[in-house]
Image (cartoon, rainbow, N blue to C red; front, side):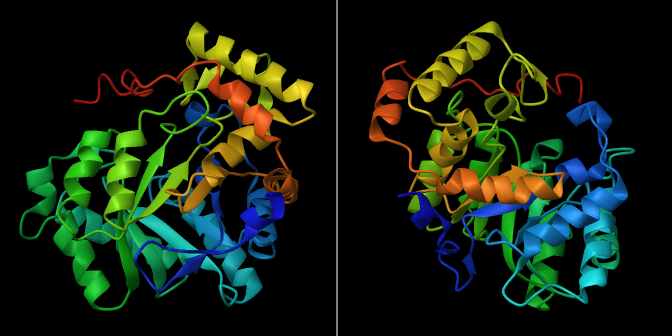
Length: 325
């Protein structure tokens, strides 16, 4: 199965064809509070270039990642390359101002204009309404609100497809049910440790939306292991997730399969999922991710993981932003 996973896929009901893995550029925003490490600018730019020269030539960024730092670094890489290579895919996300959390249509417009400037482009494949849990559905959908603002850019041909990228399933479901969206991103909610997004993925796939599953490693524990990184969804992992990770790692070790390969392919093998977004911050991570996606994993590995029982189904970020409102 391994190498077949590298084939490009149809982006939902659209005409776009995309690789199965996108380079997630959140780490390029140099957000120490979230990732606990810094990424030098030259390394960030080199990583974007490596991705665009690989089978995974799909770049996912956002205005919120470092409040423009990630987009600026992606833009610099594109400038040095002379633009986005033919066939490569570029998307960003627009939403609130992180300084005052204003999510008005005017703020979204200003920040999206800044995104175009930082990226150095006049066209994008897809733009996502970002972190919609920071506003209300009615406010976002109101005349002059964020969704209308983004749709006006879509109507002008500035980008082709509109998506929603949020946290809680119930928030995203409201938007995909409008019929206005082509894609949805969920993160940290569909992994070997947590399948909270399963109902959302079902609903989106049934409607023909492209489903993008971000953070298949749960922010790192499923790639580095719980010994060196006992965190899930950017916070200390509860003991039951650490124990399950250790059990899965033991299964993988018995069959000579890297834990990270199982975590990545768990997402890639799901027929409902179009793209798996993997955060990458070093050039060598691009090649290693291609290698992980190419490994043939015996069916027995999946059988033994399934025998552990169902994964956690609770929202993994329920306490992360408990003081946001």
